[in-house]
Image 1 (tube, rainbow, N blue to C red):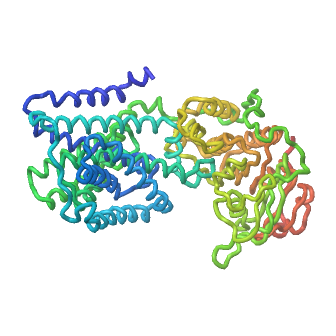
Image 2 (tube, one colour):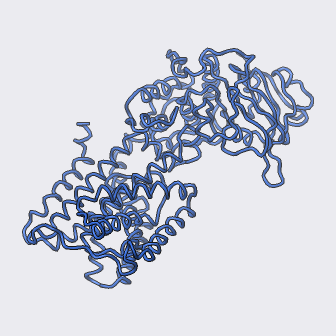
Image 3 (cartoon, rainbow, N blue to C red):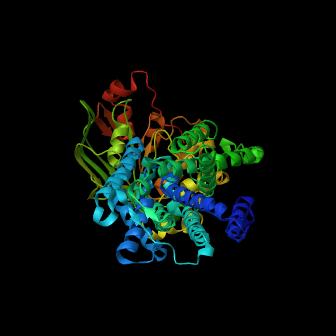
Length: 605
């Protein structure tokens, strides 16, 4: 912690933030204070928006709805019941959080453009609602608040420190979230939501929590902002322009970072004030802000802060790039760790008479095409089972049905005797079903170690609030990397690894779930023979430790050399099943898949 505080990336912005808190002590600075109050408000909103849109990647253009909810919460309590709005900031945060929970349960079911449009619709709906509930909101005429109770000579200084305190609390919340496993899960969702679900991240819970947390600063600031303006009306409280400004602030500074939204909030607020003074009128301000947005997208797509950080790190490129590591050395690496302790679920269970995974008459149609047509098969505990077939035979679709990525139109999937056909992807992952993908789906913006600490064996508050780099899970992640021969890569960005190394990292990622069954989708495709040796050795060791393996692969010698049982899929149906020797000599397999000039020698040794 002390080393982090010594970093210029930490102490410079902290020092500037502390200096900002001293500004009201400057004499004759009332105008400057009013400008800084706007800057603080924009920084608060951009930082709150960043928790859902920057970290989880769900871009909301209607997030200022929670500012309006806070404004009306304080205004209604003050005018109807005479409550002092300065004590209502926590209530504003609570109300905004509850509304965000209810809204999130609906709108977070959508993605991409649909999500953006719905958030705008929610904002405009609240504007319409507040205009029509005249008995509570005053309708289009709004609500007028009385003057604050402090001495007149204090001016806006109390407002300044209230917004300042809310900004500090928002930054503390954001910093904690980014350093937690909950934050790691949100970044995983931003990178690849489907993959995040497959490694046990309950994406529904994560997104809902992030949406609620992002609304809290808006609600608290809204109560104070309504009193600061002394007037609250629908068009001011639920303004689409405010949402655009706060999104622009996060984009300019750099979304997904801690300090970027704060920097962007100050830049946009100052630019808006400058446009008002220089040009005046809403049209001129919108034009100037639009120009800022265009320039940001064209020249600073990642935002100002990430761009500056990238320029600085390029000077140290020779030390930060992936160093060459001999692939043969990875293959020769033989860990002396007790792998059984790392994958304890099902360890030592070699009873091949027990079915751990059953597929019963599974059918999956895409339009008029039956990708999977009545497939039934059994994977016995402690076995290595192969699934082969020509391209388009339905192997990956069957895997998707097994893991819950797609739901079969008919049939049943049983895991350890329990029907999981209707279970969510993350529920199956928690139940012991792990899966790799034909084309690796690592979280490319995260380091190798982050990719391994993001998986969750179960959804629990203790795991989500735990530190990202502390606890037993991080030790296990490093041990698993050591077992895979990848211990030198933990700080490297996942996108910088070779395709073969990414395949090994993805398998290591799955092992963090302690799976009882691992589904490998063409693990040897696209990697060099040296790493195939390493992969084969790892699969054998995992199986010897009690992990059941179901493997889809076009490398037939690899499959026949590894597997106990092989199923052949053709046209969405099981063509035949049997031992490698039976499959090797089956004329139907030769004709339908292998062709007459096949060579099916199992690899020696």
